[in-house]
Length: 114
Length: 112
Image 1 (tube, chains in turn cyan, brown):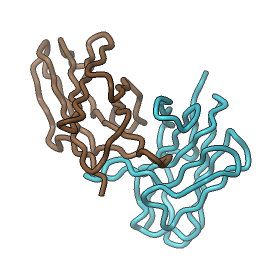
Image 2: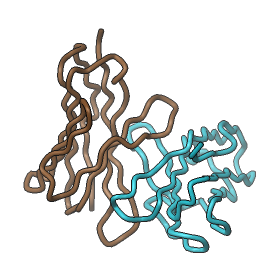
Image 3: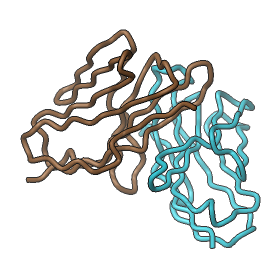
């Protein structure tokens, strides 16, 4: 089944404790992206990757890191999480970056930073 | 700065009626606009894409219009059903970059 998977789905952590949220897709997509969703602010793009070893900042990259060593995986790293990073996170992928390529979203990761 | 606005208030309509949702954008000239559906606690799901040279696009009970003069897209659901209740998001791919901008979404509730 074609899908985007994220792990963990739920995470409660404390300020400053490094964490990684994994994202994997099985559709051989080139473009992958991370978003956070907050009430009243909608979906905001954190980072995106056009292909392996090619990543760039979205609109809200501060406090996050990403890597794209393999085509299928795009982990999101929070080196020192803070409470303002409490949010619902979505990973997405599309065949390429072209505007006609629709994005497929993962199920989401709900992160709480205490 | 570039901005997308959707009705922030929830839209309640009676089953069988047509729901119309609005997406307005400023400081931007997109070549395409996408609409997604999102159910509570789940990721958005793609519904329709419309190009700037297409005035209207249809898919089953869904219809999207795109007015580049008004900088507006309208999303219609005809013969609405309670199962259509969800949040609907519009999105643009920013020209000249590889970023996406999403609206905040409009929550639709179809009453039986």
